[in-house]
Length: 421
Image (cartoon, rainbow, N blue to C red; front, side, top):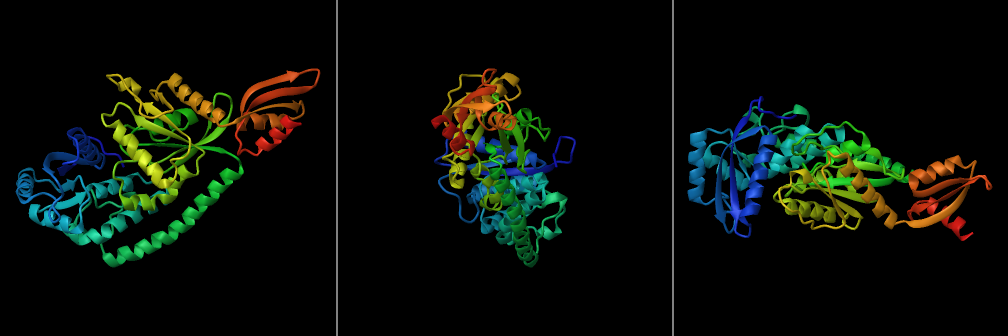
């Protein structure tokens, strides 16, 4: 579901602690992101209360004076909900809600709520529901107002417009059911990945912080028509399509879910099988919104998660997107890289050329003769290697072919044997 200005917006207050080890710029960036997440979920921010603290108050998040200020603002603005910028314990949720008199959720629950509205495939819906229930179970009594008596709203939505289950016994039973169903779905995904591997398809994973422009580049280079919007988490379910590099080399490109700072642990665990699409790749394209004031932090968030997934050793091309929105000189912090605007055809070609260049650097040169009757092999060489020469020799009635082949491609040994012969 996408919320626009014409829809009924839920009035919300935000609360945030400015941690002492946080720069003002970093704190403001996290607040801006929380506000964007709230709007994505259908909320209208009526006010923000902040406090600078060395550490979070273990019982109430804020100190007593600042909590009183929040309670007064709730009375004045009459919001339906208060959202915290940090993850809250069940005790903190309950204490804050009891004091301010409205429902309270935290950033993690907000993200889970957005994911619930974005999931379209059966696997995506099951993964989100599992993450929501695992996160909610210990916090049910901390939500203050009894959730079962609430209508629809931010933090109460399950996948597919359903309402979240709030009975503990039902939740525990449903968690077991989902885990059982996911096993079958994950097994199917694994078999699909194995088939791709068996077909020797070169696999490229497209990763990036949410709203970095992944879907734009994915759609343009694969000719796909999936959702392409300037919003957080526009893509949730991974999608794989074929792409063609300038030489004719073919690869499978997978558009993955957008990453975000402090992604809920339950969500990472639930989406493990989806995120494993990245670990199964041969190459990673990392999209970065270079026009974002905190792009370096966003870039590091993605790199940290790639490391946690064990995908940080794969070849990575960093693509600094939205260059057309930059107002000052840009200094790249990652190499190799290209700087582009994903809407420009010449820039997209630049990305494909750089990917091809990096694949070529990891490949070995071959020089071979293919008989005129070897059309099938010629096609295979065009699709699975980077072809640099293909000329017909009339005297030999054969093609003189050379190019670059990856060492892990089955063609490598065939071509190497011909070279040595």
